[in-house]
Image 1: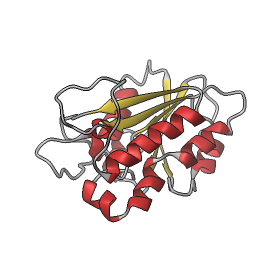
Image 2: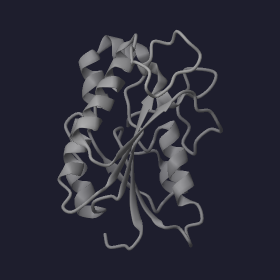
Image 3: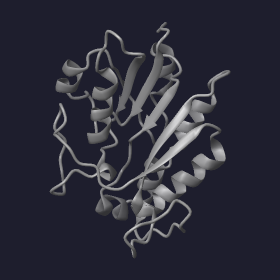
Image 4: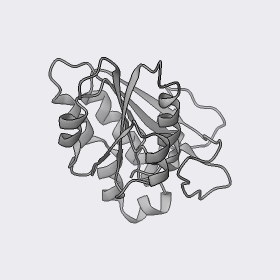
Length: 202
């Protein structure tokens, strides 16, 4: 894919936050500075999302193994910006399968793929969570000690540590609660409000 536009890859593009990011990046396509792609795990990706944002290229990727990243390189090219919204985040699922939570939430395959880019300083924006903290006070600062009380939080701490030691150009965002309108392709909500920490990893 040849384009002078900045290439943006949304990892976990069919989740709640991922879909809203795709919509945001796709607005005003006539003047848009971005070429878009997204990853999904469940196949096929939801048709309403494909219909709403046809210019965004979908790629099936298994974050545990990295299968699918080569196809992105071949068809889309190496992205300039990667936004990682993907996670196994339902607390009960993480508690039942800690190894699975770690293999998905610590983006080792993603970072390994990005490190293979030649002469690239691609930016990784990684979505973390406020569940890296113990949760005993109302407001936390970035420098406060991380002391997660569940597997999901522990996997996100491990992900942050891995990114800090393995990436040269990154930003980590510790989200709390994100809420808003339903997505183009509706996603399940397990709470009355939609939590950013429950973006599906497909």
